[in-house]
Length: 356
Image (cartoon, rainbow, N blue to C red; front, top):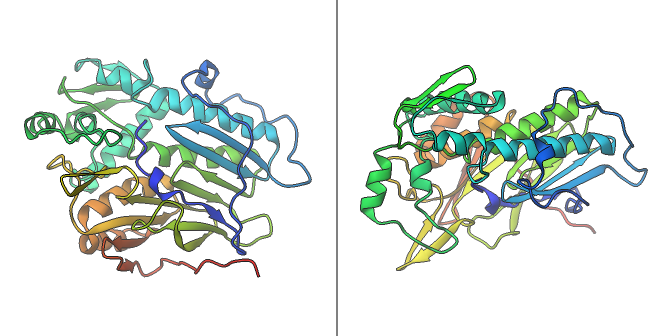
């Protein structure tokens, strides 16, 4: 699955500046675990409890990134969460053979039966596409596949134009759990929304099993369930997009909120004196060049945060801020490449604190 926001790191900081401790155990390969195809319904919550020394923790490498969960719940609940995460990897990832996305992209325009969760993500994606006038569009998959940010390869204009001719969310036909791409050459990529959907789902699973305090970090999509065990807000560190990874400049205090960021400094490379990043404009197929370095969105839903960070970034600082202010429940911080920043009216940040 495309790792859109691995750049942000979003380390969890306590009020005294302590970072989230590394979790123990977990999967190292989602595709290798066939057991992950079991849905959440019917899974029991019986099992051991978190130790007296602290909350239960989970660490897993999924979606091409490190997943960590810290929660005050039985270990068995996190085992359910891990199975659920692997399940999502196996249906949402375009690189897992036989996933829903892989099947859709290779169906050559014929109808495909998909899992209910995939249908839900696609339906939500279409809604965001309509609301953003196509700035958010999961049919950009063909364009995304032309870019290689690891090897630093810039696609040629002819190939980009060919791929762009097949971008258009209106080619998606969704009827219940049956989806069809009316353009046989179209290709979808859920990398811009899947993690948000998954974070919300895992938070719901934890709540349903009695968990009142947890931090879910999906490699840049962070969801704070409730408050910290001591009742204080979770402090989510905000990466400075103009500095090396791990350089936090502030923290966002959150309770029952999602924090999602999109920025230019993680999946990027320099070629012929120009920086190319992964936030692609669906109109040109090229990285957006509007002076922004990152956008961070705080919201009730991580799904909203995921889609809206992309939209706000592509709109640019002025129009992006207007977009955020027009949506109840969204707060945002925009950071420019020159280091300047603007924040929405309700965005809260705090300076980092260190132990005395």
